[in-house]
Image (cartoon, rainbow, N blue to C red; front, top):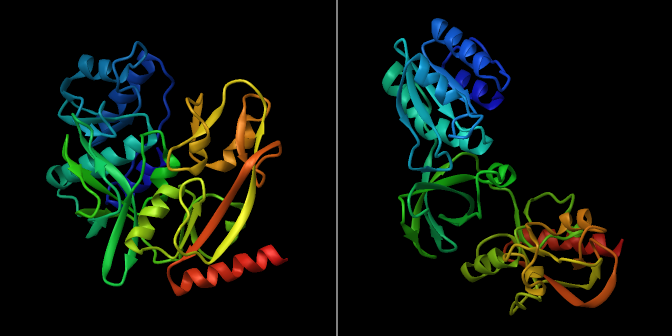
Length: 340
């Protein structure tokens, strides 16, 4: 809600009211009816699906006319547009990421047409995809990406993403738009709409406590994207586990004991993370190693001794691969941490 207020103000709109309405049909009806009397455009968030307690779209049907309900757009399918006494009412999904994306890609362009709004466009650039990526089979799909620069070329790492992944969405430098059913192969060029990009030193790979408090942007996404970056020789510092692959060259190697703690169903990891190799049929998949301690006492947890204590079951080597002078400087800082 507060993002929308800021975005609307930035786009030149005067936001007359920002109201949270309880989940009650009459309260929602009164709030929308009042807003229509004083506004040129009304935007709601939440209650746009067809569930038993999703009232907003029902109010639109009672007070006015539903123009459309549902768009072939991911994330953001349950968006609607209604018209009440000549005033457009846009219903955005309650999910935060879906709401932001629909505002950016649907409401903003429509505002240019309806109100001749002077809205600043995001810049775009062409980048080489570091991995394969495919769209939803039935919906136009936006996929967040990280951007990396090597000389005059840009590379894009499409991120695993669903609409509830606010953290993933916020870390992204931009996104790509894919038509339904389309497929981009590794090495192909893609158009990226840039939301924010800073050319800071970049560390990508396995999560490790040694990577905290460094003068760099750290993305603990796992060994798989780091290996892909190594193949394309892009990035500053890559962190790769021996459980995935031993790189042909590396600047630093550290050893971690693999340990297990607890009983019952086993907690697993996203397949980009090397620890996923140790768990078959997990009860849940974690994106980050640092989440493992939360499940101690609740399930069987496997990690290395940097994150949990437990019974030793093996050993893992973590390789630090510097590809640039910035990466070499970061390795020096990490070595200093180890020595001190």
